[in-house]
Image (cartoon, rainbow over all chains, first blue to last red; front, top):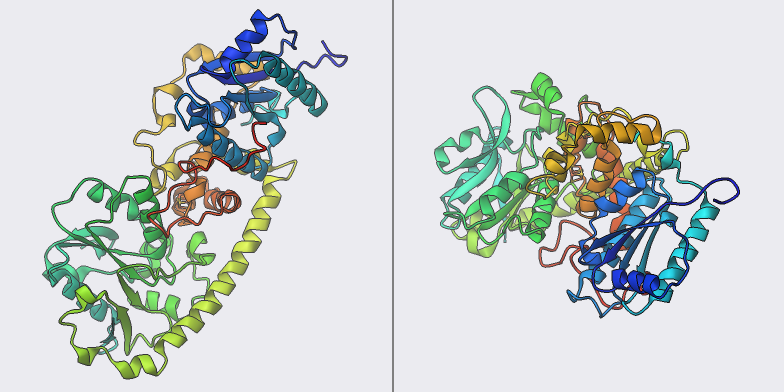
Length: 142
Length: 372
Ligand code: SF4
Ligand code: SF4
């Protein structure tokens, strides 16, 4: 627990072929990272509909991570490029509608980048601690 | 080619009907989709095959019950049995182009017939004041900056009242409509329109320069209104007290806005499917998590999801605002948010059917900092 008792909750949507394996590698390599993340595995970052991210945010997740293969490495060739455009649009729409876009992060992490996965969670957790708890944790009128 | 259509006895509607009849009688069109006046006086898009019935056609009536791109999509997503001439206003044409990109409509068998639009009234206001009152639309054309009772919000700030990229254009702005107006026709359709009717003197005497001037002023005025609306709604969206949740506080999630939106493309909306048919225990858990749960639940999720799915293609027809039982400024929010995200992708909906939708297209070397 941090001093004010606030521990960020991160929901992570990870692609089956790269980032999920990277996260697994971080675990089997016993790399330490904050236990603030709940992982949901999907076949591709391109399968992450915006509604999943929005649902998590509105239900009070402090941050949402979308993890996919590096550009050029997508198992389905172009899913990650589409994910990138969706996140770009989502962030603009969140900004337009008065929500904090800093709470959504897209990160390319390959199957061999266990350390990068751990670093990503560490960084994101720290950033979310700075931002403070999501107002959506208590906002019931949404 | 251009043809001048003379109006007799000041009856502009009759001249418009005459143009439509000639188009329907031509070899290139088997049926016309056109707003018709029902015997009870309502205006509704109708598929007409019998030219004799076109004396009930009324594309000038300032009524806008449905964005007809929605229904034209149904008739063209698979090969129809014949060619359809679609009489539409600008925002309907633009919605149609977006549906083509979404592969939910096809232009192969369609001749787009655009009619300049001076604005439309809310359906109840139209029924009360305008039905059967032939002069009503003339007022709107004569004073396009006016604000008649019941004018639809979207029309008041519509900066794209004409659609020039159609196959046929009925140019009404800037003409003395008691005398006549010009029609732009493709050469393939133009046969038989008689050279005499294509009055060179009329085009030379500047009917079109008048149109251009009238339109320029109107677009400037409406763009100004739109800008003010954007800044007002953006202020409210970013207001700590109000915000998005405040603007939609009275939403009952009736889904009207989604049902009438010509762009909302899912065959079965997620929000109407089993995913949102939550287990009873789920409501308890949500209430416990935040201490309370607004009902109906998921209203903000509904609007944010819809924005993410279709704001890039929003054509600003304002049907969503027109049908909202809670009188919420749905269209204003969607236009303002759409305007911003459209500019991120440098995207203008409604014009180029060959262009890909921004969320379908991609380039390998764009937004390279994202994900790193
Ligand atoms: S039409 Fe109005 S009340 Fe109905 S879902 Fe849309 S915004 Fe909510
Ligand atoms: S969101 Fe509203 S204004 Fe935009 S296309 Fe749909 S119905 Fe028209």
